[in-house]
Image (cartoon, rainbow, N blue to C red; front, side, top):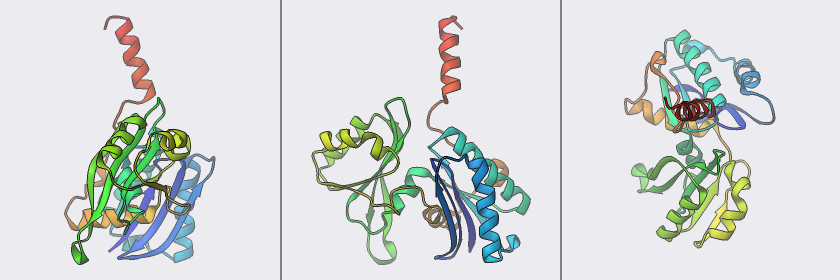
Length: 241
């Protein structure tokens, strides 16, 4: 099984070519460039370096959300275009699931935090459980848009050690330190941002379980309205519509 994995849900743009359980190549950039400038050149560079025959690719794995509205749209358009051109399915992965999967093997509760602006984070709560072939990631709190105080309150109620990661950590670090009552750590560089290899691993799982979609059916999942939609609704409300 060979997949191209893409994550453009945040500042980090990450593309990987993964075959079975081996990452053949990966290219990640966390810099102030739009994903429309980076994704296709990154994929082209990886294809050249690995002499990739696109006809051998079985699927595209993509983070469908939550995350940056613009980033998700660009990533989805790229994945959809590839899927349609190659006539292969798309394996959709929640962004917070993929972030949590970076911490594979930890015995701590995992809490990804993505800055969602407006005093909220995109988040979820996860743990790894089971043994041997049954070892897997379990979702405790599904992907949500919440105030960071609410997330930390849930973690305090659980009373378990936590690992935080994601671009929301530096934004809300002071609140995390002030409000978290349980033992916690912050994930290190290399593990604390979007990683296309984790997207690929979860994408392959989705494929094996028959949860892939046709490229024509793929749409992002934003979890909340965009700023433009919120402003339009506010104007309609003010106008009595």
